[in-house]
Image 1 (cartoon, helix red, strand yellow):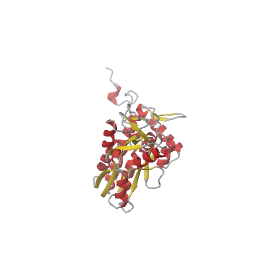
Image 2 (cartoon, rainbow, N blue to C red; image 1 turned 90 degrees about the vertical axis):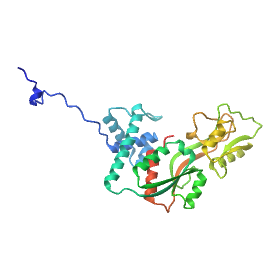
Image 3 (tube, helix red, strand yellow; image 1 turned 180 degrees about the vertical axis):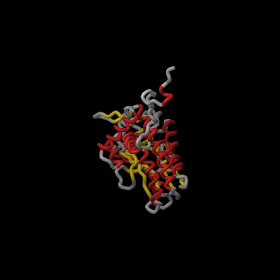
Image 4 (cartoon, rainbow, N blue to C red; image 1 turned 60 degrees about the horizontal axis):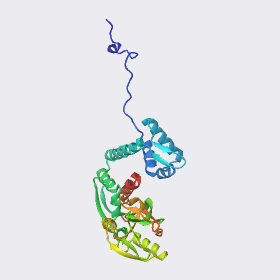
Length: 304
C-alpha cells in the first residue's frame, strides 16, 4: 500500500512552506510615515535627519516587504495610494506600541506635571486623539489642559501659569517650534452677499487676537470699511455667527468646515497673511516632559 511521504517526514514531498506574518522594519515605517505626513521627501528627510536617498530607499524596502505600492511620486506631487493610507494607520499603531514597550521595559516611566494650553480651534484637528494617545503612553504624567485664545494662552505662558502652548502665531516668528504652516482666508456662507457701499461685517475674537488684527489691518490697508457684527471668545461662536449669516470671518485655510466657503476672491477681499501653528515652551518647565508632547504632536503630524 502506498504511503504518503509526508507521514515519514520526507521534505521533498511536503507541501510548500507558508510564509510567516509580515514583519515591517520600524526604521522603514518611520521614514514612510514622515513622507506620508509631509507628502514631501525632502521635508521628511529633514525631519528625520537623514539624506533624501536614504528615505527613498526605506520607502522602497517597505513597499517590497508589503508587496504593495504605497506612494505615487511624479514631477508634480507625492500622494498616498489606498494601500499607503492603510499602511500609515498601521505604522502609527506599530510605532506607538513599540515606543510604549521600550519605555516600559526600560524601567524609567516618565513622570511629572504638564500644564498644556491649546487654541480652541485646534480641537477640530487630530490633537484630541494625539493627547489621548500621549496619556496612554505616559500615564504617570499629570496632563492639565487649558483651551483658549492664542494671545491669552501666550500671556499665561509668560506668566509661568502654563508649561507649553500650541497656538496660532505670526508666520516666520522665531519663538517656538512650528508644527504646520498655513494661510488665512476670508470665510462665509455660499450665499454670502457683501454690498459694495456697506462695511464688511466681521465676526471675530475680541482683541487682542491675531486673526482679528490681521483682518482689520488688511481691510484698512485697502480702504475698506468694516464693523464687528459678532465678538466671541470661542471658535464655536465664530462658526455659529458665520453660519447664521451675521458676517464673515478670517480662518486658517486648513480649518475651514465643509459647510463654509472661501469668499476672498469673490468680493475682492484683501489677503490677510500667513499663520504658523506653533508649540512654545516655558523655559522653566520640565524639559523632558514638554519635549515628549512636542515630539508627539510634531512627530505624529496633525490631521485636519
